[in-house]
Length: 302
Length: 296
Image 1 (cartoon, rainbow over the protein chains, first blue to last red):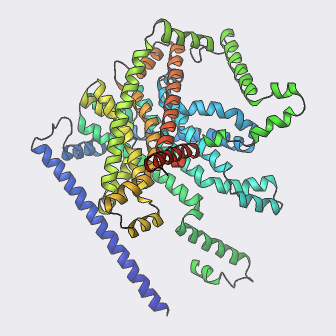
Image 2 (image 1 turned 180 degrees about the horizontal axis):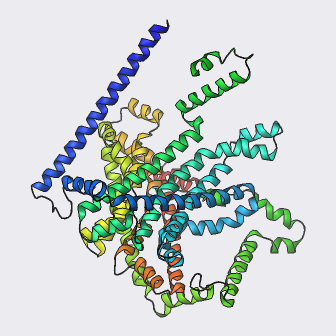
Image 3 (image 1 turned 90 degrees about the horizontal axis):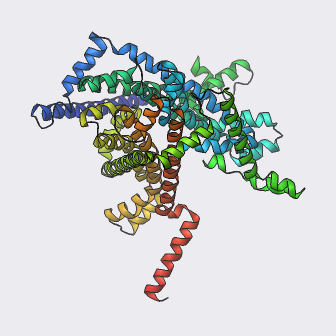
Protein backbone atom coordinates (compact mmCIF):
# COMPACT_ATOMS: atom_id res chain seq x y z
CA UNK A 1 0.00 0.00 0.00
CA UNK A 2 2.80 2.31 0.87
CA UNK A 3 4.39 1.94 -2.57
CA UNK A 4 1.13 2.86 -4.28
CA UNK A 5 0.86 5.93 -2.13
CA UNK A 6 4.45 6.80 -2.85
CA UNK A 7 4.10 6.62 -6.63
CA UNK A 8 0.96 8.71 -6.37
CA UNK A 9 2.85 11.28 -4.39
CA UNK A 10 5.74 11.24 -6.88
CA UNK A 11 3.36 11.69 -9.77
CA UNK A 12 1.79 14.62 -8.04
CA UNK A 13 5.19 16.12 -7.32
CA UNK A 14 6.24 15.69 -10.95
CA UNK A 15 3.05 17.28 -12.12
CA UNK A 16 3.52 20.24 -9.79
CA UNK A 17 7.11 20.66 -10.90
CA UNK A 18 5.96 20.53 -14.50
CA UNK A 19 3.27 23.17 -14.00
CA UNK A 20 5.70 25.42 -12.15
CA UNK A 21 8.18 25.04 -15.00
CA UNK A 22 5.60 25.95 -17.65
CA UNK A 23 4.43 28.98 -15.70
CA UNK A 24 7.99 30.13 -15.24
CA UNK A 25 8.71 29.63 -18.92
CA UNK A 26 5.60 31.60 -19.86
CA UNK A 27 6.54 34.46 -17.56
CA UNK A 28 10.10 34.51 -18.86
CA UNK A 29 9.08 34.50 -22.49
CA UNK A 30 6.60 37.33 -21.92
CA UNK A 31 9.24 39.30 -20.06
CA UNK A 32 11.67 38.73 -22.93
CA UNK A 33 9.05 39.81 -25.46
CA UNK A 34 8.31 42.99 -23.50
CA UNK A 35 11.99 43.85 -23.25
CA UNK A 36 12.50 43.16 -26.94
CA UNK A 37 9.52 45.37 -27.80
CA UNK A 38 10.87 48.16 -25.61
CA UNK A 39 14.28 47.86 -27.22
CA UNK A 40 12.71 47.83 -30.67
CA UNK A 41 10.51 50.87 -30.08
CA UNK A 42 13.50 52.94 -29.00
CA UNK A 43 15.74 51.58 -31.76
CA UNK A 44 13.07 52.65 -34.24
CA UNK A 45 13.15 56.13 -32.71
CA UNK A 46 9.49 56.21 -31.61
CA UNK A 47 10.37 57.29 -28.07
CA UNK A 48 13.06 59.73 -27.12
CA UNK A 49 15.93 57.61 -25.89
CA UNK A 50 16.83 60.37 -23.55
CA UNK A 51 13.56 60.01 -21.62
CA UNK A 52 13.40 56.24 -21.62
CA UNK A 53 16.74 54.48 -22.12
CA UNK A 54 16.92 51.10 -23.84
CA UNK A 55 16.87 47.95 -21.70
CA UNK A 56 20.36 47.10 -22.94
CA UNK A 57 21.66 50.42 -21.65
CA UNK A 58 19.97 49.81 -18.30
CA UNK A 59 21.52 46.34 -18.15
CA UNK A 60 24.90 47.88 -18.89
CA UNK A 61 24.35 50.44 -16.11
CA UNK A 62 23.42 47.65 -13.69
CA UNK A 63 26.59 45.80 -14.65
CA UNK A 64 28.62 48.93 -14.11
CA UNK A 65 27.06 49.67 -10.72
CA UNK A 66 27.30 46.16 -9.37
CA UNK A 67 30.30 44.59 -11.09
CA UNK A 68 32.77 47.12 -12.47
CA UNK A 69 32.52 50.30 -10.40
CA UNK A 70 30.89 48.55 -7.44
CA UNK A 71 29.72 51.96 -6.27
CA UNK A 72 26.29 50.83 -5.22
CA UNK A 73 27.11 48.40 -2.42
CA UNK A 74 28.12 51.06 0.09
CA UNK A 75 25.08 53.23 -0.63
CA UNK A 76 22.84 50.17 -0.63
CA UNK A 77 24.08 49.11 2.80
CA UNK A 78 23.67 52.61 4.23
CA UNK A 79 20.07 52.99 3.09
CA UNK A 80 19.23 49.51 4.32
CA UNK A 81 20.76 50.31 7.68
CA UNK A 82 18.85 53.58 7.96
CA UNK A 83 15.57 51.94 7.03
CA UNK A 84 15.99 48.98 9.39
CA UNK A 85 17.19 51.13 12.31
CA UNK A 86 14.31 53.57 11.78
CA UNK A 87 11.88 50.69 11.56
CA UNK A 88 13.19 49.18 14.79
CA UNK A 89 12.74 52.45 16.66
CA UNK A 90 9.32 53.11 15.14
CA UNK A 91 8.19 49.58 15.92
CA UNK A 92 9.44 49.69 19.52
CA UNK A 93 7.70 53.00 20.24
CA UNK A 94 4.57 52.04 18.29
CA UNK A 95 4.14 48.67 19.99
CA UNK A 96 4.88 50.09 23.46
CA UNK A 97 2.31 52.86 23.02
CA UNK A 98 -0.23 50.45 21.53
CA UNK A 99 0.14 47.99 24.41
CA UNK A 100 -0.20 50.74 27.00
CA UNK A 101 -3.24 52.15 25.22
CA UNK A 102 -4.81 48.72 25.02
CA UNK A 103 -4.20 48.01 28.69
CA UNK A 104 -5.39 51.36 29.95
CA UNK A 105 -8.56 52.98 28.67
CA UNK A 106 -7.79 56.36 30.17
CA UNK A 107 -4.39 56.49 28.54
CA UNK A 108 -5.93 55.62 25.19
CA UNK A 109 -8.57 58.31 25.51
CA UNK A 110 -6.00 61.00 26.15
CA UNK A 111 -3.59 59.82 23.48
CA UNK A 112 -6.28 59.48 20.81
CA UNK A 113 -6.63 63.15 19.70
CA UNK A 114 -2.88 63.55 19.30
CA UNK A 115 -2.66 60.29 17.41
CA UNK A 116 -5.39 61.46 15.03
CA UNK A 117 -3.64 64.77 14.39
CA UNK A 118 -0.37 62.95 13.81
CA UNK A 119 -2.06 60.58 11.43
CA UNK A 120 -3.54 63.22 9.13
CA UNK A 121 -0.24 65.11 8.97
CA UNK A 122 1.66 63.86 5.96
CA UNK A 123 4.69 62.40 7.74
CA UNK A 124 7.04 63.16 4.89
CA UNK A 125 6.27 66.86 5.34
CA UNK A 126 8.45 66.64 8.43
CA UNK A 127 11.51 65.95 6.26
CA UNK A 128 13.08 69.44 6.32
CA UNK A 129 12.32 69.88 10.01
CA UNK A 130 13.78 66.51 10.91
CA UNK A 131 16.91 67.37 8.95
CA UNK A 132 17.19 70.69 10.75
CA UNK A 133 16.87 68.82 14.05
CA UNK A 134 19.15 65.87 13.47
CA UNK A 135 21.64 67.19 10.96
CA UNK A 136 22.76 65.98 7.58
CA UNK A 137 24.07 62.60 8.72
CA UNK A 138 22.41 59.24 9.29
CA UNK A 139 20.50 60.42 12.33
CA UNK A 140 17.96 62.44 10.42
CA UNK A 141 17.26 59.58 7.99
CA UNK A 142 16.75 57.12 10.81
CA UNK A 143 14.51 59.62 12.60
CA UNK A 144 12.30 60.20 9.57
CA UNK A 145 12.05 56.46 8.90
CA UNK A 146 11.08 55.94 12.56
CA UNK A 147 8.49 58.73 12.54
CA UNK A 148 6.68 57.60 9.45
CA UNK A 149 6.84 53.87 10.18
CA UNK A 150 5.50 54.43 13.70
CA UNK A 151 1.92 55.12 12.78
CA UNK A 152 0.82 52.01 10.84
CA UNK A 153 2.49 49.85 13.48
CA UNK A 154 0.78 51.66 16.35
CA UNK A 155 -2.69 51.62 14.79
CA UNK A 156 -2.54 47.99 13.70
CA UNK A 157 -1.21 46.70 17.00
CA UNK A 158 -3.84 48.64 18.89
CA UNK A 159 -6.60 47.40 16.58
CA UNK A 160 -5.41 43.83 17.05
CA UNK A 161 -5.21 44.13 20.82
CA UNK A 162 -8.65 45.65 21.23
CA UNK A 163 -10.54 43.39 18.83
CA UNK A 164 -10.46 40.09 20.65
CA UNK A 165 -13.26 37.67 19.93
CA UNK A 166 -16.01 38.25 22.52
CA UNK A 167 -16.93 34.57 22.81
CA UNK A 168 -13.38 33.56 23.52
CA UNK A 169 -13.04 36.33 26.09
CA UNK A 170 -16.18 34.98 27.74
CA UNK A 171 -14.66 31.50 27.71
CA UNK A 172 -11.43 32.73 29.31
CA UNK A 173 -13.39 34.58 31.97
CA UNK A 174 -15.63 31.66 32.80
CA UNK A 175 -12.60 29.41 33.18
CA UNK A 176 -11.26 31.94 35.68
CA UNK A 177 -8.31 33.23 33.68
CA UNK A 178 -6.40 36.07 35.30
CA UNK A 179 -5.93 39.44 33.58
CA UNK A 180 -2.35 38.46 32.89
CA UNK A 181 -3.43 35.18 31.29
CA UNK A 182 -6.10 36.89 29.21
CA UNK A 183 -3.49 39.31 27.93
CA UNK A 184 -0.78 36.78 27.08
CA UNK A 185 -2.85 33.85 25.92
CA UNK A 186 -5.77 35.59 24.26
CA UNK A 187 -5.16 39.17 23.31
CA UNK A 188 -1.55 38.83 22.17
CA UNK A 189 -2.15 35.81 19.90
CA UNK A 190 -5.31 37.49 18.56
CA UNK A 191 -3.39 40.68 17.87
CA UNK A 192 -0.36 39.12 16.21
CA UNK A 193 -1.69 38.74 12.65
CA UNK A 194 -2.94 42.34 12.54
CA UNK A 195 0.16 43.68 14.26
CA UNK A 196 2.38 41.86 11.78
CA UNK A 197 0.43 43.33 8.89
CA UNK A 198 1.17 46.72 10.44
CA UNK A 199 4.84 45.86 10.79
CA UNK A 200 4.93 44.85 7.14
CA UNK A 201 3.50 48.21 6.09
CA UNK A 202 5.87 49.93 8.52
CA UNK A 203 8.88 48.25 6.94
CA UNK A 204 8.07 49.53 3.44
CA UNK A 205 7.24 52.94 4.87
CA UNK A 206 10.57 53.07 6.70
CA UNK A 207 12.38 52.50 3.41
CA UNK A 208 10.42 55.36 1.85
CA UNK A 209 11.34 57.59 4.79
CA UNK A 210 15.04 56.82 4.47
CA UNK A 211 15.05 57.43 0.71
CA UNK A 212 13.07 60.67 0.91
CA UNK A 213 15.33 62.02 3.66
CA UNK A 214 18.28 61.22 1.42
CA UNK A 215 16.66 63.14 -1.42
CA UNK A 216 16.29 66.16 0.80
CA UNK A 217 19.83 66.31 2.12
CA UNK A 218 22.53 63.67 2.33
CA UNK A 219 25.94 62.64 1.10
CA UNK A 220 25.48 58.90 0.88
CA UNK A 221 22.72 56.39 0.30
CA UNK A 222 20.72 55.16 -2.65
CA UNK A 223 18.56 58.28 -2.65
CA UNK A 224 21.62 60.43 -3.20
CA UNK A 225 22.79 58.16 -5.99
CA UNK A 226 19.37 58.35 -7.61
CA UNK A 227 19.30 62.10 -7.47
CA UNK A 228 22.87 62.45 -8.70
CA UNK A 229 22.29 60.22 -11.73
CA UNK A 230 18.93 61.81 -12.54
CA UNK A 231 20.26 65.34 -12.45
CA UNK A 232 23.33 64.45 -14.49
CA UNK A 233 20.74 63.03 -16.92
CA UNK A 234 22.24 59.56 -16.79
CA UNK A 235 18.79 57.97 -17.05
CA UNK A 236 20.02 54.40 -17.47
CA UNK A 237 21.98 54.54 -14.22
CA UNK A 238 19.02 56.24 -12.49
CA UNK A 239 16.71 53.42 -13.55
CA UNK A 240 19.31 50.89 -12.42
CA UNK A 241 19.31 52.60 -9.02
CA UNK A 242 15.52 52.54 -8.96
CA UNK A 243 15.64 48.80 -9.60
CA UNK A 244 18.07 48.47 -6.69
CA UNK A 245 15.47 50.16 -4.51
CA UNK A 246 12.92 47.62 -5.70
CA UNK A 247 15.38 44.93 -4.70
CA UNK A 248 15.75 46.48 -1.26
CA UNK A 249 11.99 46.64 -0.90
CA UNK A 250 11.71 43.01 -1.95
CA UNK A 251 14.40 41.91 0.51
CA UNK A 252 12.81 43.74 3.42
CA UNK A 253 9.35 42.60 2.45
CA UNK A 254 10.37 38.94 2.15
CA UNK A 255 12.06 39.07 5.54
CA UNK A 256 8.80 40.35 7.00
CA UNK A 257 6.86 37.65 5.15
CA UNK A 258 9.18 35.03 6.62
CA UNK A 259 8.72 36.44 10.12
CA UNK A 260 4.98 36.49 9.54
CA UNK A 261 5.11 32.87 8.44
CA UNK A 262 7.02 31.84 11.56
CA UNK A 263 5.14 33.91 14.13
CA UNK A 264 1.52 33.48 13.11
CA UNK A 265 2.02 29.95 11.87
CA UNK A 266 -1.56 29.02 12.69
CA UNK A 267 -2.74 31.21 9.83
CA UNK A 268 -0.80 29.18 7.25
CA UNK A 269 -1.84 25.60 6.66
CA UNK A 270 1.59 24.33 5.63
CA UNK A 271 3.40 25.93 8.59
CA UNK A 272 0.64 24.78 10.91
CA UNK A 273 1.17 21.18 9.84
CA UNK A 274 4.93 21.36 10.37
CA UNK A 275 4.61 22.98 13.78
CA UNK A 276 1.99 20.59 15.02
CA UNK A 277 4.08 17.65 13.87
CA UNK A 278 7.05 19.07 15.75
CA UNK A 279 5.03 19.65 18.90
CA UNK A 280 3.55 16.18 18.70
CA UNK A 281 7.05 14.74 18.40
CA UNK A 282 8.23 16.73 21.42
CA UNK A 283 5.18 15.58 23.34
CA UNK A 284 5.85 11.96 22.41
CA UNK A 285 9.48 12.24 23.49
CA UNK A 286 8.53 13.66 26.85
CA UNK A 287 5.69 11.23 27.46
CA UNK A 288 6.82 7.84 26.13
CA UNK A 289 3.74 6.19 27.57
CA UNK A 290 1.26 8.25 25.57
CA UNK A 291 2.10 7.35 22.00
CA UNK A 292 -1.27 6.25 20.75
CA UNK A 293 -2.14 9.22 18.56
CA UNK A 294 1.20 10.77 17.90
CA UNK A 295 3.15 7.69 16.96
CA UNK A 296 2.93 8.25 13.24
CA UNK A 297 3.91 11.88 13.40
CA UNK A 298 6.74 11.28 15.81
CA UNK A 299 8.13 8.53 13.59
CA UNK A 300 7.97 10.82 10.59
CA UNK A 301 10.23 13.35 12.19
CA UNK A 302 13.00 11.01 13.25
CA UNK B 1 -9.28 55.78 13.79
CA UNK B 2 -12.30 53.81 14.86
CA UNK B 3 -10.09 51.96 17.28
CA UNK B 4 -8.96 55.10 18.94
CA UNK B 5 -12.21 56.98 19.19
CA UNK B 6 -14.79 54.29 19.80
CA UNK B 7 -15.12 53.77 23.47
CA UNK B 8 -18.42 52.75 24.93
CA UNK B 9 -17.12 53.44 28.39
CA UNK B 10 -16.62 57.07 27.58
CA UNK B 11 -20.35 57.76 27.82
CA UNK B 12 -21.13 56.11 31.10
CA UNK B 13 -17.95 57.48 32.54
CA UNK B 14 -19.37 60.98 32.77
CA UNK B 15 -22.67 59.87 34.25
CA UNK B 16 -21.02 57.69 36.85
CA UNK B 17 -18.87 60.52 38.06
CA UNK B 18 -21.63 63.09 37.59
CA UNK B 19 -24.00 61.21 39.85
CA UNK B 20 -21.94 62.48 42.79
CA UNK B 21 -22.06 66.21 42.33
CA UNK B 22 -22.75 68.74 39.66
CA UNK B 23 -19.32 70.29 40.08
CA UNK B 24 -17.67 66.97 39.38
CA UNK B 25 -19.67 66.41 36.22
CA UNK B 26 -18.80 69.82 34.81
CA UNK B 27 -15.14 69.85 35.79
CA UNK B 28 -14.36 66.30 34.78
CA UNK B 29 -16.39 66.03 31.62
CA UNK B 30 -14.07 64.27 29.10
CA UNK B 31 -13.93 67.22 26.72
CA UNK B 32 -13.12 69.64 29.51
CA UNK B 33 -10.36 67.37 30.65
CA UNK B 34 -9.01 67.01 27.12
CA UNK B 35 -8.83 70.77 26.82
CA UNK B 36 -7.26 71.12 30.24
CA UNK B 37 -4.52 68.66 29.35
CA UNK B 38 -3.97 70.37 26.02
CA UNK B 39 -3.73 73.78 27.72
CA UNK B 40 -1.28 72.46 30.29
CA UNK B 41 0.91 70.95 27.57
CA UNK B 42 0.92 74.14 25.53
CA UNK B 43 1.56 76.21 28.66
CA UNK B 44 4.51 74.07 29.70
CA UNK B 45 5.89 74.27 26.17
CA UNK B 46 5.51 78.06 26.15
CA UNK B 47 7.20 78.44 29.52
CA UNK B 48 9.96 76.06 28.49
CA UNK B 49 10.58 78.08 25.35
CA UNK B 50 10.47 81.42 27.17
CA UNK B 51 12.90 80.37 29.88
CA UNK B 52 15.24 78.86 27.31
CA UNK B 53 14.88 75.26 28.47
CA UNK B 54 13.67 74.38 24.98
CA UNK B 55 15.87 75.68 22.19
CA UNK B 56 13.62 77.78 19.91
CA UNK B 57 15.62 76.46 16.96
CA UNK B 58 14.39 72.99 17.83
CA UNK B 59 10.89 73.75 18.99
CA UNK B 60 9.66 77.34 18.71
CA UNK B 61 7.21 78.61 21.32
CA UNK B 62 3.50 78.10 20.58
CA UNK B 63 3.02 81.88 20.64
CA UNK B 64 5.74 82.28 18.03
CA UNK B 65 4.08 79.65 15.85
CA UNK B 66 0.72 81.39 16.20
CA UNK B 67 2.33 84.69 15.30
CA UNK B 68 4.02 83.12 12.28
CA UNK B 69 0.74 81.65 11.12
CA UNK B 70 -0.95 85.02 11.49
CA UNK B 71 1.77 86.52 9.34
CA UNK B 72 1.58 83.74 6.76
CA UNK B 73 -2.18 83.83 6.39
CA UNK B 74 -3.21 87.40 7.19
CA UNK B 75 -0.45 90.00 7.07
CA UNK B 76 1.87 88.70 4.38
CA UNK B 77 -0.62 86.30 2.83
CA UNK B 78 2.20 84.48 1.05
CA UNK B 79 1.04 81.01 1.98
CA UNK B 80 -2.19 81.06 -0.02
CA UNK B 81 -0.59 80.77 -3.44
CA UNK B 82 1.69 77.92 -2.38
CA UNK B 83 -1.21 76.13 -0.72
CA UNK B 84 -3.25 76.50 -3.89
CA UNK B 85 -0.41 75.13 -6.03
CA UNK B 86 -0.02 72.07 -3.82
CA UNK B 87 -3.76 71.41 -3.69
CA UNK B 88 -3.92 71.72 -7.47
CA UNK B 89 -1.09 69.24 -7.93
CA UNK B 90 -2.67 66.82 -5.48
CA UNK B 91 -6.10 66.99 -7.13
CA UNK B 92 -4.81 66.71 -10.69
CA UNK B 93 -2.41 63.88 -9.88
CA UNK B 94 -4.98 62.04 -7.79
CA UNK B 95 -7.61 62.25 -10.51
CA UNK B 96 -5.23 61.04 -13.21
CA UNK B 97 -3.77 58.32 -11.01
CA UNK B 98 -7.08 56.92 -9.81
CA UNK B 99 -8.60 56.92 -13.29
CA UNK B 100 -5.53 55.11 -14.56
CA UNK B 101 -5.52 52.66 -11.64
CA UNK B 102 -9.22 51.81 -11.73
CA UNK B 103 -9.32 51.66 -15.52
CA UNK B 104 -6.35 49.36 -15.74
CA UNK B 105 -7.72 47.17 -12.97
CA UNK B 106 -11.03 46.80 -14.81
CA UNK B 107 -9.27 45.81 -18.02
CA UNK B 108 -6.99 43.41 -16.19
CA UNK B 109 -9.53 42.11 -13.69
CA UNK B 110 -11.88 40.89 -16.41
CA UNK B 111 -9.20 38.68 -17.91
CA UNK B 112 -7.80 35.92 -15.67
CA UNK B 113 -4.88 35.21 -18.04
CA UNK B 114 -3.64 38.80 -18.00
CA UNK B 115 -4.10 38.84 -14.25
CA UNK B 116 -1.86 35.84 -13.79
CA UNK B 117 0.82 37.21 -16.06
CA UNK B 118 0.82 40.59 -14.37
CA UNK B 119 1.36 39.21 -10.88
CA UNK B 120 5.19 39.35 -10.71
CA UNK B 121 5.23 42.94 -11.94
CA UNK B 122 2.68 43.91 -9.34
CA UNK B 123 4.79 42.33 -6.59
CA UNK B 124 7.92 44.22 -7.69
CA UNK B 125 5.96 47.45 -7.99
CA UNK B 126 4.48 46.94 -4.55
CA UNK B 127 7.90 46.55 -2.95
CA UNK B 128 9.42 49.58 -4.69
CA UNK B 129 9.31 52.84 -2.78
CA UNK B 130 7.29 54.51 -5.53
CA UNK B 131 8.17 58.02 -4.51
CA UNK B 132 11.78 57.18 -5.36
CA UNK B 133 11.00 57.73 -9.01
CA UNK B 134 10.71 61.45 -8.24
CA UNK B 135 14.14 62.68 -9.36
CA UNK B 136 13.87 60.67 -12.57
CA UNK B 137 10.53 62.24 -13.49
CA UNK B 138 11.76 65.71 -12.64
CA UNK B 139 14.84 65.20 -14.80
CA UNK B 140 12.65 63.98 -17.64
CA UNK B 141 9.76 66.44 -17.45
CA UNK B 142 11.36 69.54 -15.98
CA UNK B 143 10.91 71.58 -12.84
CA UNK B 144 7.35 72.77 -13.47
CA UNK B 145 3.93 71.45 -12.54
CA UNK B 146 3.77 68.64 -15.07
CA UNK B 147 6.51 66.67 -13.31
CA UNK B 148 4.79 67.08 -9.92
CA UNK B 149 1.45 65.99 -11.28
CA UNK B 150 3.08 62.97 -12.94
CA UNK B 151 4.81 62.00 -9.69
CA UNK B 152 1.56 62.31 -7.73
CA UNK B 153 -0.17 60.27 -10.40
CA UNK B 154 2.40 57.48 -10.17
CA UNK B 155 2.36 57.54 -6.39
CA UNK B 156 -1.41 57.21 -6.13
CA UNK B 157 -1.98 54.89 -9.06
CA UNK B 158 -1.24 51.73 -7.13
CA UNK B 159 -3.74 51.64 -4.26
CA UNK B 160 -6.88 52.07 -6.42
CA UNK B 161 -5.47 49.55 -8.89
CA UNK B 162 -4.91 46.83 -6.31
CA UNK B 163 -8.13 47.52 -4.45
CA UNK B 164 -10.27 47.56 -7.59
CA UNK B 165 -8.70 44.30 -8.66
CA UNK B 166 -9.25 42.55 -5.34
CA UNK B 167 -12.73 44.04 -4.98
CA UNK B 168 -13.84 42.77 -8.36
CA UNK B 169 -12.44 39.33 -7.71
CA UNK B 170 -14.18 38.80 -4.40
CA UNK B 171 -17.69 38.90 -5.79
CA UNK B 172 -20.34 37.22 -3.68
CA UNK B 173 -20.85 33.70 -5.08
CA UNK B 174 -24.54 33.54 -4.25
CA UNK B 175 -25.24 36.87 -5.89
CA UNK B 176 -23.32 35.81 -8.96
CA UNK B 177 -25.34 32.61 -9.15
CA UNK B 178 -28.55 34.61 -8.86
CA UNK B 179 -27.49 37.00 -11.63
CA UNK B 180 -26.68 34.07 -13.88
CA UNK B 181 -29.90 32.23 -13.19
CA UNK B 182 -31.85 35.40 -13.98
CA UNK B 183 -29.91 35.51 -17.23
CA UNK B 184 -28.05 38.72 -16.69
CA UNK B 185 -25.69 39.45 -19.55
CA UNK B 186 -21.99 40.13 -19.08
CA UNK B 187 -22.40 43.88 -19.06
CA UNK B 188 -25.11 43.71 -16.41
CA UNK B 189 -23.03 41.41 -14.26
CA UNK B 190 -20.13 43.81 -14.60
CA UNK B 191 -21.96 47.07 -13.86
CA UNK B 192 -24.62 45.88 -11.42
CA UNK B 193 -22.72 43.22 -9.55
CA UNK B 194 -18.94 43.34 -9.82
CA UNK B 195 -18.47 47.08 -9.82
CA UNK B 196 -21.04 47.70 -7.09
CA UNK B 197 -19.65 44.91 -4.96
CA UNK B 198 -16.17 46.31 -5.37
CA UNK B 199 -17.20 49.89 -4.57
CA UNK B 200 -16.41 49.91 -0.81
CA UNK B 201 -12.98 48.42 -1.45
CA UNK B 202 -12.35 50.86 -4.31
CA UNK B 203 -13.27 53.75 -2.05
CA UNK B 204 -10.81 52.49 0.57
CA UNK B 205 -8.15 52.43 -2.14
CA UNK B 206 -8.99 55.97 -3.18
CA UNK B 207 -8.70 57.12 0.43
CA UNK B 208 -5.23 55.60 0.67
CA UNK B 209 -4.29 57.17 -2.67
CA UNK B 210 -5.47 60.60 -1.55
CA UNK B 211 -3.36 60.38 1.60
CA UNK B 212 -0.27 59.39 -0.36
CA UNK B 213 -0.99 62.04 -3.01
CA UNK B 214 -0.30 64.83 -0.52
CA UNK B 215 2.97 63.21 0.57
CA UNK B 216 3.89 62.65 -3.07
CA UNK B 217 3.32 66.28 -4.00
CA UNK B 218 5.35 67.48 -1.02
CA UNK B 219 8.28 65.19 -1.76
CA UNK B 220 8.23 66.22 -5.42
CA UNK B 221 8.39 69.84 -4.30
CA UNK B 222 11.21 69.08 -1.87
CA UNK B 223 13.27 67.59 -4.69
CA UNK B 224 12.97 70.54 -6.99
CA UNK B 225 10.33 73.21 -7.42
CA UNK B 226 9.80 76.94 -7.26
CA UNK B 227 6.36 77.01 -5.68
CA UNK B 228 4.19 74.89 -3.42
CA UNK B 229 4.00 74.08 0.28
CA UNK B 230 7.04 71.82 0.07
CA UNK B 231 9.15 74.68 -1.23
CA UNK B 232 7.88 77.05 1.43
CA UNK B 233 8.55 74.52 4.18
CA UNK B 234 12.02 73.79 2.90
CA UNK B 235 12.86 77.46 2.51
CA UNK B 236 11.77 78.35 6.05
CA UNK B 237 13.64 75.43 7.58
CA UNK B 238 16.77 76.17 5.61
CA UNK B 239 16.74 79.75 6.90
CA UNK B 240 16.04 78.33 10.40
CA UNK B 241 12.78 80.24 10.64
CA UNK B 242 11.32 77.34 12.58
CA UNK B 243 8.16 79.13 13.72
CA UNK B 244 7.06 79.66 10.12
CA UNK B 245 8.07 76.11 9.24
CA UNK B 246 5.84 74.80 12.02
CA UNK B 247 3.10 77.11 10.77
CA UNK B 248 3.37 75.43 7.37
CA UNK B 249 3.35 72.03 9.01
CA UNK B 250 0.17 72.83 10.94
CA UNK B 251 -1.41 74.06 7.72
CA UNK B 252 -0.54 70.75 6.12
CA UNK B 253 -2.08 68.93 9.08
CA UNK B 254 -5.28 70.91 8.54
CA UNK B 255 -5.14 70.13 4.84
CA UNK B 256 -4.62 66.45 5.59
CA UNK B 257 -7.57 66.50 7.97
CA UNK B 258 -9.77 68.26 5.41
CA UNK B 259 -8.79 65.67 2.78
CA UNK B 260 -9.50 62.85 5.22
CA UNK B 261 -12.96 64.17 6.10
CA UNK B 262 -13.83 64.92 2.48
CA UNK B 263 -12.88 61.45 1.37
CA UNK B 264 -14.91 59.99 4.21
CA UNK B 265 -17.96 62.08 3.27
CA UNK B 266 -17.61 61.21 -0.41
CA UNK B 267 -17.23 57.56 0.55
CA UNK B 268 -20.42 57.64 2.59
CA UNK B 269 -22.26 59.20 -0.35
CA UNK B 270 -21.04 56.75 -2.94
CA UNK B 271 -21.14 53.58 -0.88
CA UNK B 272 -24.29 54.69 0.91
CA UNK B 273 -25.48 51.13 1.53
CA UNK B 274 -22.57 50.62 3.89
CA UNK B 275 -23.61 53.58 5.96
CA UNK B 276 -26.93 53.25 7.81
CA UNK B 277 -28.24 56.88 7.96
CA UNK B 278 -27.24 57.50 4.39
CA UNK B 279 -28.91 54.24 3.39
CA UNK B 280 -32.15 55.37 5.02
CA UNK B 281 -32.05 58.73 3.29
CA UNK B 282 -31.41 57.22 -0.12
CA UNK B 283 -34.06 54.56 0.22
CA UNK B 284 -36.58 57.14 1.40
CA UNK B 285 -35.80 59.30 -1.61
CA UNK B 286 -36.06 56.37 -3.99
CA UNK B 287 -39.34 55.31 -2.47
CA UNK B 288 -40.73 58.85 -2.86
CA UNK B 289 -39.63 58.89 -6.47
CA UNK B 290 -41.24 55.52 -7.07
CA UNK B 291 -44.50 56.73 -5.54
CA UNK B 292 -44.44 59.90 -7.62
CA UNK B 293 -43.92 57.95 -10.79
CA UNK B 294 -46.35 55.15 -10.16
CA UNK B 295 -48.78 56.75 -7.75
CA UNK B 296 -48.88 53.86 -5.34
